[in-house]
Length: 107
Image (cartoon, rainbow, N blue to C red; front, side):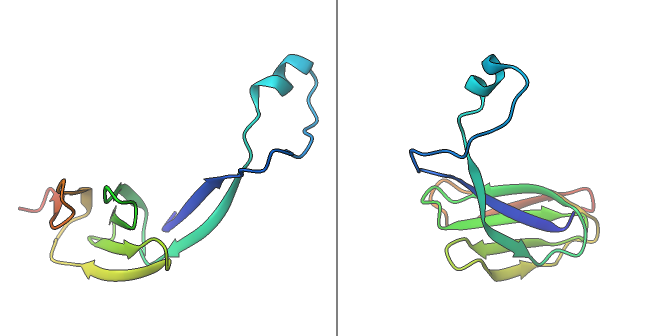
């Protein structure tokens, strides 16, 4: 799938009741997650993602030969890196968030 879904844990103390066969199972699932953003921009499957240390930006790597930098708060593309000739297998930010390294089998 070419879509990235950002999920957030619901901080609400009241969780919706869940129907389970076994009461013990109900105790295992106390988390309630919701999709807060949908990032669309890749044309093919996403292989890897990486966040900046401050959580404001994300980079994604795809089979479509691109890496995309995202502003997570706005849910928008900042830049598309399209210099690879083959699919992008991995992506990472440097510890200070100033550089991105991408990995592909093309070079």
